Every structure is written in structure tokens, then in C-alpha cells.
Image 1: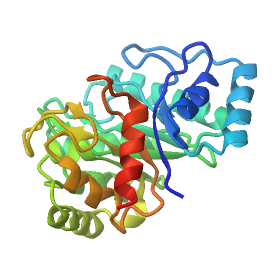
Image 2: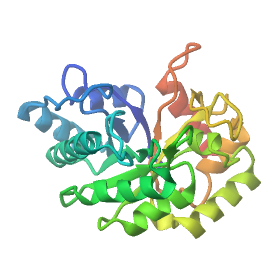
Image 3: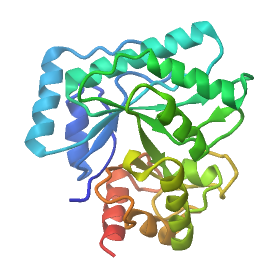
Length: 277
């Protein structure tokens, strides 16, 4: 079964994310456990958590991903930011455990002067401080690679996965990959990109995809998402990607915009049309 869904809101109660997903005809999804722009602890009471678990099971909406706060920076050389980032990630992991959510997704962050090697070592150190509950997996997300941000190259992801004491997996974001220079706008480009990922990271570590088209050209390091098939990756690239053997049963989570009269529902339907080709 094709698993495709969207990032939905927990406003009014975490269970509402499931209801919203069903409105879009999605069958997997992603949430923030709190506002991603601030350091804050989630406020999810046990009744809402139980309702989320029950609705997820009743409607077979799975898997779910918690996306970590945008403030988290695993690569930072700054002690205070390191401590806040680790504490925030631990909270997300504990919430995932309470909600029976499989994955917590995180960007590696920026090395801000520590250098690539130093930043990657910092990321491994940060991740290794976490107490990851049984049944929850940390996903390291590919990045667009602007400035000193790490994770835009597959070897960055591979290093962290190889060196961490945890069994980490990877979330590939198509718009980020494209921005970082992986040209997936053609079937040949998709084949080449997956071949490089297989050799560098390993296809067995691909657990989730953030499926987004890009408003900017390949290699620009600009992270701005477009409707599926309507950006510079285009229909040919998107179709080749979702139908590639490497994707298989990997859940596809959309972070596409709501504009031009098109919402997540339009994009989910578009993905299903491309997957049926």
C-alpha cells in the first residue's frame, strides 16, 4: 500500500492531526509536538494522547513522524545550545514513545565555524547522549546545504549513521536534495542519485521521504517548496522518484505549500496519480 500523507496540526489536541490527515485522504503523517520556533515543552494530556493512539489505530494512519524544533542544532560547538538541543530532542523522543509514534526527525544543523568534521563529530556526540526509547527511531534529514549547515551531502548522513551508537535512519527531502545539487528532475538523475545514496548511506537506512517539489533550480541551496510536479523537479522527476524501487514501501510525507487554491489534498492526490503511472 502506498503510504502518503502530510504535515498536520495538533492545534486543539494532538488527535486533531489524525482527523486533519483523514480530510486530506492521507494515511501517514508528521506533526510538531509544539511550536517549532521556540524552546518549549509539549503540553499533551493523557486523554488527547490516548485519542491520538486510538484514531491512528482505527483508521490505520501510519507511520507518524515528529519533526523536531527548528532551533535544535546538533552540530553546534556552543555548550548552551548543545544542552538545549539535546534536552529538546529527548523530550521529542519521550513524546513519541507516549504517542506510539515511530520516528523523530531532525536536521543536523550548522557547524557555525567548527568545520565540517567538527560539526559532524558534535552531531554524533549530541545524538549519543540521547536515551532513545524502544520502538522509536531517530531520523536524520537531508538538508539544502546553505551556509554552514550540514546534511546536504550523503557522506554527512553516512558519517553520522555510521559513528553513532544508535541505529539511526534517514529521511530524504526531495526539495533539499535538489537544492543541494542532486538533480532528480529526470529518470536518469533519480537513478544516479539513488545509486550514490545506496553506495554512501545504504538503502536499508531510508525510512521516510519528505516529498516536495522545489521553487528553485538544482544546486542553489535555496529551500522553498513547490506543489508536486509544479516546480523545477517537475512531473518527470517526481514520477520517477515515487515509482523507483528504492522508495518501495517508504512513507511519503508532504510539506508542500497551501497556495494557488491547492492544499495538501491536491498534492496527495497528485502523488497517487504519479504512483499509478
